[in-house]
Image (cartoon, rainbow, N blue to C red; front, top):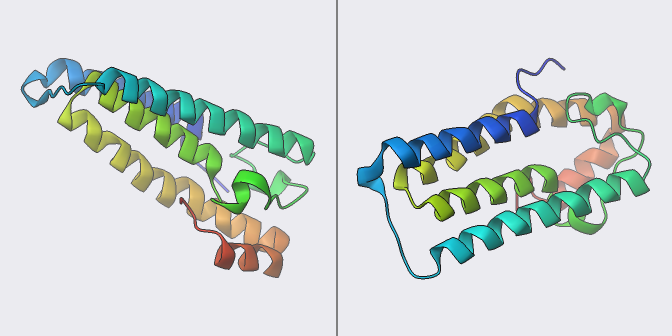
Length: 150
């Protein structure tokens, strides 16, 4: 599997683009009561999901490296992975949406949508192919039970 951008780096790049959109597209700014609080809570929720998901992989003694899904030694389907097949990517999305809301810009809110599209096409689908080859019917059954995002 040959990937272009590691997901954490993609999240960082998207976060910088969100900040840039908020800074340079000021006419698209918005504000509402509790906006900063909601943004921070979403970002913290994303971080919490990440910590729980990574800890689940460590407890299962399997690879957490998204660039090498074939290095996985075990198919993890419990905990958060019983709700979403990609809690680590969902956590990045939560942080990005929270950041967009915190900064309060409509253009910034469009960037997490592009993040989901890019990640699905260039990371998740190739990952799914590799995991299908590695775990076969067990992975396919898991995909039938648990959604890709939420």
